[in-house]
Structure formats: structure tokens, C-alpha cells
Image 1 (tube, rainbow, N blue to C red):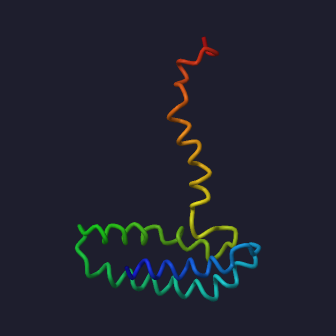
Image 2 (cartoon, rainbow, N blue to C red):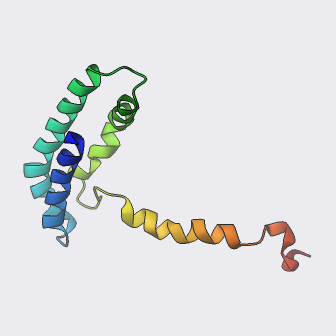
Image 3 (cartoon, rainbow, N blue to C red):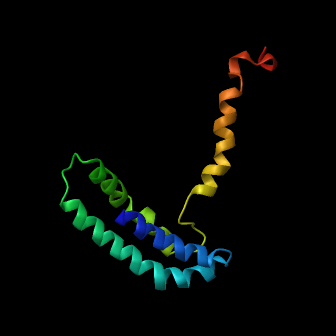
Amino acid sequence: MEAVKRIDALFDVEREINGLSAAGRLAPRRERSAPLVAAFESWMRVERAKLSRHAAVAKAIDYVLTRWEAFTRFLEDGRICLSNNATERALRGLALGRKSWPPVSTCSALG
């Protein structure tokens, strides 16, 4: 629950700066989000040290920590969103359509 609270604090900042230009998002991210991100990383490392390597939570923490550079990239580039929801929504149509499209070998145009 603590991790969710920490992530939600990051999204609070993002909600406040939503609609600003990429340059306009950078200053609040550096001023307000960067300290939250640093504290989140420290907290995760402390919590991870307490867990067995087989614990599901440990695996989730390891996943984030091994991708930390990618996760924190939004702090340096105002064009990058904290969430990838918009991208996933854009791709969902392709994934859903793929199930109903006929295989290429059955297309009559290919003879």
C-alpha cells in the first residue's frame, strides 16, 4: 500500500501539470517529482532488502529497479508521460482486430 501511495503522489503532480507544454512540465517535475522519485527508490531498496528473493513483491520491486533509468526518464523530458496508458489504448485496436482478421494465407487476393 505504501508503494501505491508514493506512486499516487507522482500522479498528483502529473494531474496538476496536465495540459502544459513539454517545457512547462519539466520544472514542476524536477522540483516536485524528482524528490518523490528519489525517496521512492530509497524506500524500495530498503524494503527489498527485507524480502526473500522468491517473494512476489520482491520480484515486482526488482522489475522496477532494473528498469529505473527508463522509469525516471519522464523527469528529464517533458514529452514523456509518466503513464503509458495512452499508448496502450492506441494499440488496443490493433491487438483486438488481429484476432478477427483472417490469416494471410486465406485471403482471396493472394490467390
